[in-house]
Image (cartoon, rainbow, N blue to C red):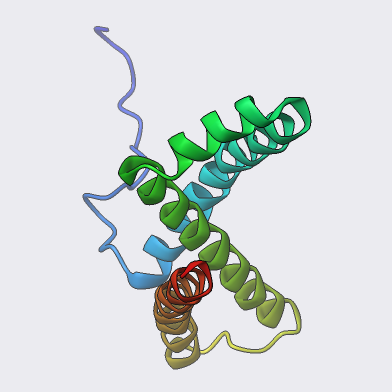
Amino acid sequence: MPGAAERPLSPHLQIYRPMLTMMMSIVHRVTGVALYFGTALLALWLVAGATSPEAFDLVNGIYGSWIGLIVMIGYSWALLHHAIGGIRHFVWDTGAGFGPEWRELLARLTIGGSISLTVLLWIVIWLVKG
């Protein structure tokens, strides 16, 4: 528009350097959304179990396929990652962990803990399943 005053643009990724804690905030939100859809899959499984043995077998067959297992592993990782991220936020709510080194450590522990616990969970599942 001719004659319009130039307005300053809000700084975005061109200005800010992506930091681990910023990425963790984004991933925390994404896992929250993923948990919403994963919980719908859990509800579908429960409804199928309450409906009939055939419906339950159908849903178990889908969830037990290779793509279903990938979704289940992803859902369990999202659940664990979001839970550990919630613990990290709880620590911050107490007023602790705001220093740069603590923020970085808590972010790394969230990543490492969620991956480690997911691997451990699925090892136990496969061992119990036999």
